[in-house]
Figure 1: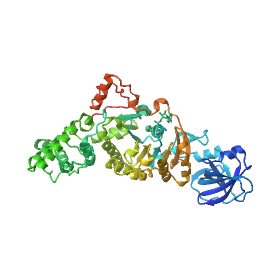
Figure 2 (figure 1 turned 180 degrees about the horizontal axis):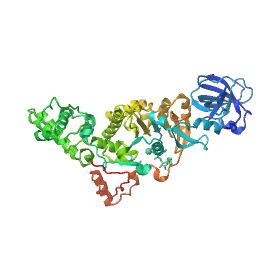
Figure 3 (figure 1 turned 90 degrees about the horizontal axis):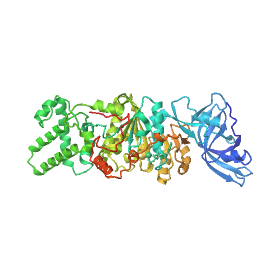
Figure 4 (figure 1 turned 30 degrees about the horizontal axis):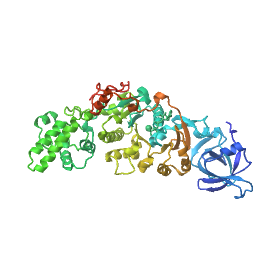
Amino acid sequence: MSFDQGTGSLGSVIAVRGSRATAVFPFGSASNAVRSRATVGKFVGILSGASLLVSAVTDVTLKNDGGNGVSQPSTLATLDIIGEIRNYKEPGARFVRGVGDYPAIGDSVQLLGSEELRIIFDKSNSAVIEIGRLQLDQELKAYIDVNEMLSKHFAVLGTTGVGKSSAVALLLQKVVEARPDLHVLILDVHNEYRSCFGDRALALSPRNMRLPFWMFNFEELIDIFFSGRKDFVEEIDVLADLIPIAKANYNNGPAVASRTLAVKRPDAVGPRYSVDTPVPYRIADLMALIDAQMGKLENRALISHYKRLIARIESVSADPRYAFIFERANVGGDTMADRIGHMFFKSHTGVPVTIFQLAGFPSEVVDSLVSVIARLAFDLGQWSDGGKPLLLVCEEAHRYISADRTLGFGPTRRAVSRIAKEGRKYGVFLGLVTQRPAELDATILSQCSTLFAMRMTNDRDQALLHAAVPDTAADLLSFLPSLGTGEVFAFGEGVALPTRIRLSRLAPHELPKSEAVGGKALDDAQGVAAIVNRWRGGREGDRASEPAPTPGELTLAF
Ligand SMILES: Nc1ncnc2c1ncn2[C@@H]1O[C@H](COP(=O)(O)OP(=O)(O)OP(=O)(O)O)[C@@H](O)[C@H]1O
Ligand SMILES: [Mg+2]
């Protein structure tokens, strides 16, 4: 092993405070070329006993006045100590985070050479993915510890157009190779990820996804029926009363229930269901229950609520855009295991990635849909005791878990927060992506232990990151506005040091691209007709400009 890239001594430590040291680099102590590299954002080593304390240079100042006990012009540098190479210069040299022994006044400071960097970023002992090159030394590959990154969640943050989605595509491509046991779920808000994974992903859209209404919990279902409107209190009460009866009637004996359609409380012997229990029932039975209950009423005002409720359920369940929820709503049958398998398990999908192409779903149901997906992901983790690890990647995360708690859909926020807080116990991991970090719920972001920060110019966004990263890394954040496209600062558990990485380039066919943009220009009458048809929820075959299904796009039946 050779450490001779070195670099020689730059100077020595003159003050130590906590994990922060001040060093003075007298002019002439190193060649100009070396000295000029000892600047902010670089790493240096403090030789301290048998260890080399790895530190980030966070501040440099020129001192001409001979202050601090030096009589010649010198550079004063502030160094944040991040970790140490133990047994430095010995065969067993290895890097650990944090420091055992602090430096002493007079300890020598040197630039880190390639060999030191190699030891720091050497991840041969753990599962790693290579995602690019270190900006510090382009010869060195940048590795991320995949298990650390996943199990403590991660976030990709940056202004629009800096390469977040490309970074996510790159990370996920590597993650699925490194963790064959993992199933990745992508909430693809702009329908842009399908091209990134070739035939290793299943893309789900309303055309091929079926999520029966009875798999939604009560809040989610209410949101679908009433689109978040608040003036349906009586109607909601009626549903809260009758849905459990419809479930019990159906599950205790569908044949009897469909003949009698009585508003009878289920037998005390049969299982009881709550409004949220995910067991099948039929919309026709529910409607019949509402109708029967209405028949017994004398109060006209109340009757009008029942009528309004029936009209609402009828119109929503017959809306072709909602067919993926209500198709076969009156047939029944317990398809839950099948549905879940086809969305969440590689053993069923045959591929390690499921892409929920949310842009294709009616915007009114996207909130509920995301809530169901996040909720099911967590529940599956819990019920499988972590035996089926899942990674939920959430693009435009600020939409679902906004800093302003009054915004967004409560159940979605709760479902995502639950994964952030407890998911790791059950093998359910979270990857958040946003262009507006300041609008993201800070407590959820703080659960993400690996952060990939890309170019960010907004002060509020940067301030939020300051709160989220450790002190030793905070000074590096001042570089964020100057990062190029495809460059990222990686912080936290997944990386050895907070470091600037130039991400590997993706081939053009692997880049995320919006299918809406990629389509043909719709400038003729036929194009407009195709748009109108989609709008109305036209089904397959009616869509002139629909891209042909890829091998990963299966058509799933109930
Ligand atoms: N790793 C990369 N390899 C190749 N090209 C890249 C890479 N990263 C970014 N680019 C280029 O930058 C463009 C924008 O990247 P991308 O769509 O990932 O940005 P974004 O931050 O997700 O943008 P938005 O905020 O609009 O979602 C890409 O279309 C591509 O041309
Ligand atoms: Mg993007």
